[in-house]
Image (cartoon, rainbow, N blue to C red; front, side, top):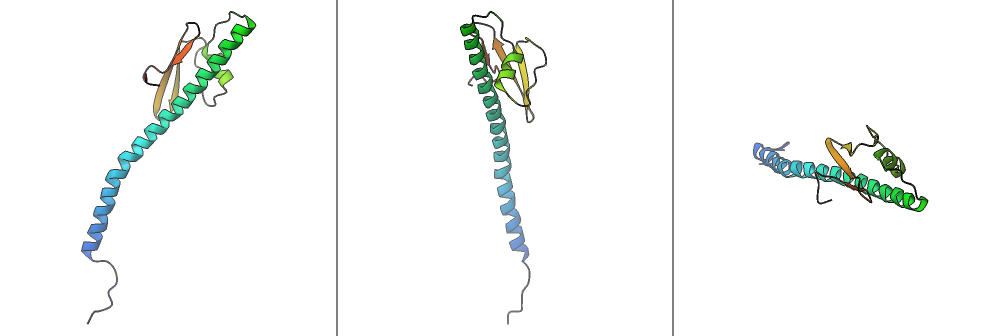
Length: 123
C-alpha cells in the first residue's frame, strides 16, 4: 500500500539543516584560527629572512673591515624578500602587512644588530 514517495520529509530536512549548522559553528572559528596561524607563519618567515640577511651583512662588514652602518634598505635588499618595501632609509622600524595584519620589526643598533618583532616576544 505504499505509494511511490519522492523527495524528503520535513523532519529529514530539519535534521540536515541542524547538522550543517553544527558543522558551520565548528568550522568557521577553525578557519579563522588557521588564517591567523598562516599570517603569523608568513611573518616568521620574513623575520627569519631578515635575520639571516642581517647576519650575512654583519659578517661581511667584519671580513671587509668596513664601518658602514646597517640599515633596513640593505638588509631587505640582500634578503631578496618580494613585496617588502622600506619606507625610510635608516629607520629603526620596518612595517610589513601580511593579509589584514600589520607586523612591525625593530632593529637594535648594537653590535651585532638584532632584529626582533616587539609585538611577538616569543619569536
